Length: 336
Image (cartoon, rainbow, N blue to C red; front, side, top):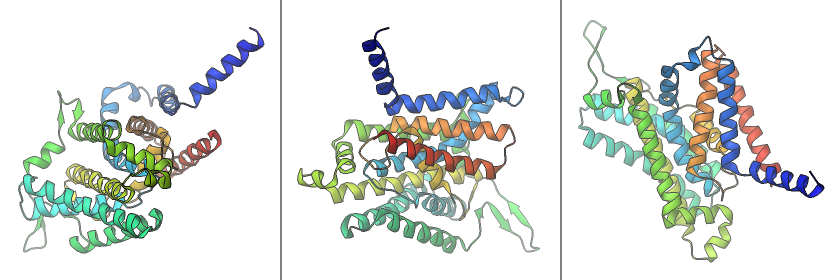
């Protein structure tokens, strides 16, 4: 091969490697290959392992859908885990304690999550405050509110009797449905909810004018404002949707645990950010997409599952996740 051929091959490789989708796919394939090698005596080859993986990553993936919208607009939302916990408490209170119909309990919970996100977005958009500070404050506030509403206790089907013992009732049919598996017990309902959330985000980003606005704000906010983009309104929308998706994740979390735990979702914001970044969405905003987030969710999910079936401790898993996030950000920075 002549010099021009070598240059052409090198250029083709650089163009291939700089494509975020191909890099995310390569990362996923690498993790799968690791699973094929360290298969825990064949556990990795069983469909039940992959089915459970998809079920376990669904809650994180739903959070990452909302996080994707925020990060594309050059923001960050540290409150998603706390809003999840607050939503789980609200949904448990509505469904288990007060006996509300799901036609009332679900919209009320979604509204609460969206309002929390909108409050963050309003402060960021109208007062020009830093997203990190505002969402950090919302993270603390939402967690405190969850503990205050629940009295610091988990809300479940348990009823305390006169002798101090507890009687556990049955969960409402809607909660059992959310916790069920469909398609001959091959796919969890929460996995389908995750895919539905991903589709909604794709529709917003790829087909609606609002999606183009979010990309424009993330690319250059001042240029977007001068071009007539309603920057304040779009930031408010992004954070409100992030809160809405956090509420969806909270409902799914509550259904899986059949209780509303005020501590639920602690640290989940790290996993959501990791999924988005590993997928290839730029932390500086303006680039990325929900398809990349789905690849990131699968990558994190498979990595967690492989470490779990090989009996790797939680401490090591958390440290590895942190290292992966930092590595992904460094790679993004060096690619510019």
